[in-house]
Length: 160
Image (cartoon, rainbow, N blue to C red; front, side, top):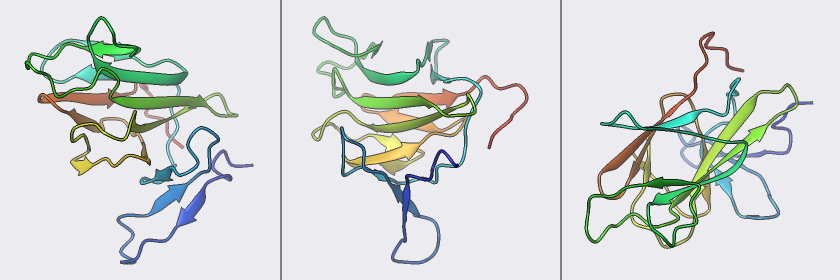
């Protein structure tokens, strides 16, 4: 059985195929709409590279909360912001890393809460309740001009 059998395809209105969505009712977020097709899995959970620096943050299996570095932040990955005041929330985005039956990983990106400043996935604005399956080299633009690249160390370039 496919790891995506529980996802329901939602046809887009224009019929052009560019905005095919997938939906999955998850107990923690029943209204999530997947905006990208769930078609790639990787041999590792992947990492986020901070564009313009040498910093990289390894993702772990499960829930990874990414946000601004602050004493009161509960984020797993905390990023320093040079803006004062910062527009990046202490808990801003979430990347869920799930191991599927064949031992490989899928990753999906969503906003942590309803009210955060504009955040982009490959140039497209993310709305609360939407989720995007990540692919190698996807770019996430956070407020305060912070850009992350999702990288998967996968020398064989094996995807399914």
